[in-house]
Image 1 (cartoon, rainbow, N blue to C red):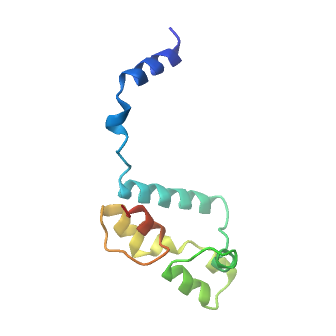
Image 2 (cartoon, one colour; image 1 turned 135 degrees about the vertical axis):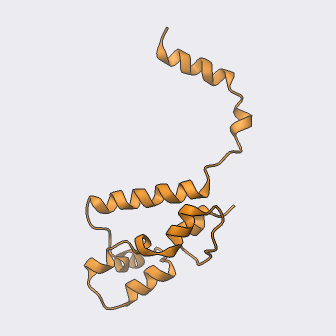
Image 3 (cartoon, rainbow, N blue to C red; image 1 turned 90 degrees about the horizontal axis):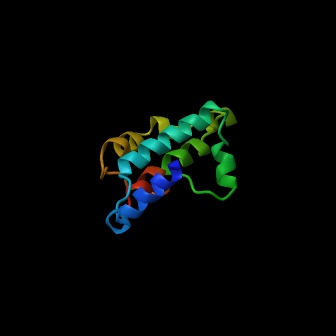
Length: 111
């Protein structure tokens, strides 16, 4: 028997409608996002916040503050989410009290 046939048989026996409304928990999405950004940082520097803003992308309030202060592009290319309390709250609570605009962690917790 072919391995693919086993998966097709299993899929045919599964009622897709019972799982259609399930979504990944926001805490899981937040944790995955943090891991992906950390992985991206490990392969090289991120685009500076000034360049991100110049490209027309919105920044969260903390990224906007870092972008506005007179520091080097190397500092502006660091990931401010690593030290932001929103990340910690989003990874540990399903409904954290974070509300500021343009924060990726807030987006994961919207219903």
